[in-house]
Amino acid sequence: MALFKNLFQQTNDEKGFRPAPAPESGFFGTVKSDPTFKAENDASKLKKAIETKGVDEATIVEVLAKRSNSQRQEIQDNYRKTTGKSLADDLKKALKSDFEEVVLALLMTPAKYDAFEMRKAMKGAGTNEKVLNEILGTRSDTEINALKTAYKEGGHLLEEDIKSEVKGDLETTLLALCKATRSQHRDFDDGQAKSDAKALFEAGENRVGTVCSVFIDILTNRSEAQLYKIFQHYAQLSKDGFAKDLEGELHGNFEDCLMTLVKAALNKPAYFAERLHLAMKGLGTNNDTLTRIIVSRSEIDLLKIMQEYKRMYGKTLQEDLLKETSGDYEKILLAICGAP
Image 1: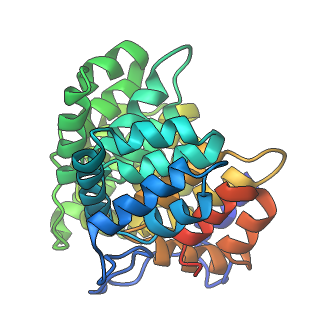
Image 2: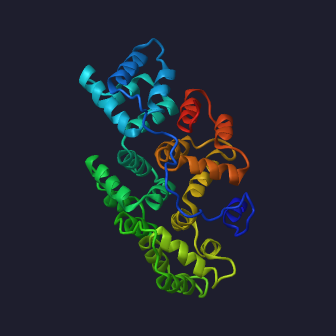
């Protein structure tokens, strides 16, 4: 809990969580298109790397970690045309373990990768609710609609799987997010923000018990810019602020889901930095989380995530990856993070 409290303390402490500055224009990914790219050359390199005795992992890292997702799709198309086989299938046969998982993730489109991770989180015994919260709580309406389409192409309906795997207020919240009705505009309505802040205060901190439906309705239907303004007005009603009050009112996976929406609205890169830190903290490392976040944010905001990681924890993401991972898995994650 100490980390959580530190994350949301409203101070200028450099290790504390603080709201993100105004949006900047520009590119904040670590992976971008290679200007000298030729799909046929890369497809040929990968074919040779796969057929090399023992497999040439270094070439696989060099090619796939340094090409944009759209370029990887072209490589796959060329590979199929020239060999008659699937590049993903051939790599799956040649590779193993966490390195294989990263390589296959890089070959999927962003929507298919999100769909793959959502399906993996719900199939088999048990459900990984934190993965559902992370993906649905941080994606735009456009990304969620693309995810739903990709999920359906895989033979399943996202909403139906959620209904069968999740219950109660968490189910209601996730299904609301699946509707993809949150505006992406940076504009906000100050009057509505004041009204919503009061409604949240009256539904939780200012009464015995919690009216969860009010929390769900506001947090799943307002844009991130609008939520940011709501939290500012809420701070005038409560001495602890919304995040701290939410922690006191709720618990478990439902709290984690709503808190994801709060953190994403305040500072999305910091949210992902915290997730990466927790994946490496303590005994054992959650490689699934490392892979998912580093791959999925590599062309969006991984540079900002790395900046927030250094600010919040006093060391670089790469330093912790070097301590917590090894071998080809370590090399490909570091390459995606920008290592030469």
